[in-house]
Image (cartoon, rainbow, N blue to C red):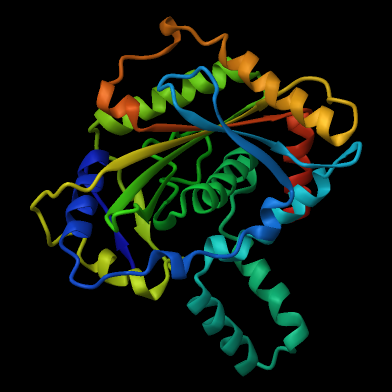
Length: 322
């Protein structure tokens, strides 16, 4: 079963989605659908702090974790690759695939590899940076915002030279009052440093809210969505009355951080986190595009410096096997 938006402006898709959530007849327990990312997050270190970005509030500074004097880089890559199956398939569809492989005579010990091989076919070998970025976004939206994916951004074409527009992800959560919240995820990964990455991200955020050009097949309901959310997908095109469901944005900036920081864990992590604040202080008012103040107030940043970023992306591609 599949739902694909065609000939709809990007923000119209979000508007219909907001209306859908406000009219749902069946409550969905979002927390019950959240995967356990405790093991994944052991490979990352983070703190929440005001990092001198507009809006001035606590954002998330993060980096690859360390074990004594060593960065757990391989553990991080392994955690990313291990999340591929649940990124592509819901638990229900994984169970379906297990039964199907059983029926065709596959040994139980081989089935996990069969499912992984099938899942990684969704990844585009020509755009490993984009694939890494979208997978990281998926995991951090779940962990930091308790928001599960609702629709997936699909490639318009197999031609890597054709740009795709719109948010990189749309996730759904509930606030403390039990109201649904939509998170539009935007992620940029730049080897050229922090300032180009955040400028590109802010430009994309602005487009997400103001650019109404139609884009075919931008969002799709697929087999990664749990069964409990099918009603939302089925109601996308049915409801038109707007309600007071807020849309927030999460902007993940991964950038080349230069030389590796040396030292024991506590000192090295502090230096990395401090470097994020220093990088953010280089962003002046002239670097921000024109963004509506209400929209700007809903932006949440996750800042992720990585040394030898190109090598990390290469290792991710090799480990993924595409």
